[in-house]
Image (cartoon, rainbow, N blue to C red; front, top):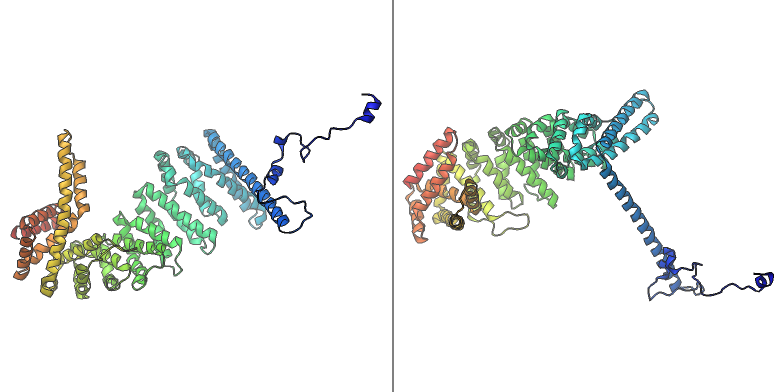
Length: 575
């Protein structure tokens, strides 16, 4: 092009994108988003001021904010992907390297604290480094198959040492790590690795160390209250994996700490609920733990805690759960014979009797506690005391008028009837002399109304048990027709189905029937026979039920059980 052409040249003034980009598909996202407005919004030139301008400006601002949030989300997803990739790339060498790095930082922190004990600023950086590596080690919680490295390289010992670190933040971080490492969902993926870790923690007296740390934490500080909750989570995880640890954990000061924490006069909170739950778990299986509870005044403490609900209902579903856990603790503790005398001395019967008189939520659970306190020949003293405090006046109205339907927070009729009938049965078994006569005479009141009620319960559960038996017999016949055997496991399932239908209640009711019939009061025996004839029942069916019941309590080598078996068989034969 010569000089003339250059002077005459004019650039192409064709239609261009407003951003000067010739390719519309490569527009910046922000610009494209800004132009994609709704049909009801028009882009103004800015000369016309008013609602439309403000609305458009706000819309553009909202779009920019959404785009910013999208970018942040992409960044977070990227970080998550990087973390996931890091987990996948962790091999044995990487894990060992991480553990060794952790140990070096622990030692470095110890050295700096000793060297600059009077100048926290000097060792603060080492504590930040230590906190970081503890957080990084949470990645191991997803790999229980590598837990043995934590034990072999003595990292578990370092964890336990850090539980009581002078810096509460380090301690809290280690507790969080332990909770994740012992998470039951992770541990069940590799039980061998889980047992190695749990055994190492137990060898290091983990319960005592955790209790010492909880003692120093201030639950008025949110982070430290959460640390207490996570500590209880570690304990629960360990028990769930190995229930046999309960007595050992309880003896390592855990049970005492739980009782002390429950006794604190402070408002209901999640940690108090968790303490009651852990205590209930500890007491479920082992007499050693129940005995320990009694030795540390646990029965009195539980009664004091439950006395609050004598005339007041819990104010929330969580507090209701707390109350039920406390009642469960009391019931479990009464399975140990020695605690029944402590319950008697602590006026537990009087408290439960008062709860029965009040129409509060605690009444149903109080009935369950009385059942546990009076059952068996070890409950004889409690049975006698219950009559002495006029408990029959409270109990028999509940026998005559069970709850009509299950309400929110209420109890099923079957459970209610089971406890009431079991209490009466225990009293008939344990009472002697005038007190027994007072109980028997209750069945003669109001024209034998209680005998009528007794027979009503008998027919109710007899029909249910018979229906369950008929169904199971049909299943048995079908299996035999197919050439399959009815094995011992199926027989156990058969028995459990009958229990679910109400076999235990039926056995207790029939025991009461033969006891009151043999009391020497002819009116009671005549009414029983009259109702049996009227409703198509038979003495033979009651005898059959009683013989099966006697057979179940005569199992084992307990002489008292064998004596009771012979007594019940004699009653059945004479009926």
